[in-house]
Image 1 (spheres, rainbow, N blue to C red):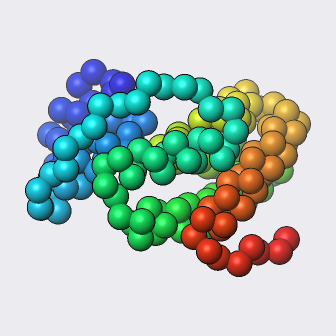
Image 2: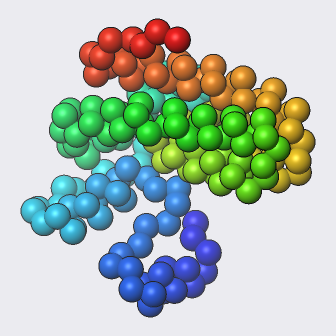
Length: 173
């Protein structure tokens, strides 16, 4: 849920439109249809939320939502490719900022990752990164470093799942 008045402030500042975070796939798709033209697809009723505890289940649920709103496979794969390409540099910035004990860059990178993971339905990963963000704000650097091991492990699982789905060769570490 957006902060009250935030939409109006953004539109008043010159933005063309506004979507509150966390962005749901159905809302994003509807907004894209609105701005890109074409007949908007009917927006399905949201499925009852069931907390998924594994990356595969969460990624499958997100992909399922996109399929429900008739998103083309190529578009889903392109989105997943963007996740594969854009996430590692931000994770590296976060790890390096934690190592150097730099609060602001660490918090910014963690916040960015947290939102990205939440947007694509990876709630378990988003929650771990949220914890890292709090640790950075509180300057609990060792705890943040320890939790980064979990973030890396979970994202490694996501990378493997996405790579298998879109047919890319698995990168060696």
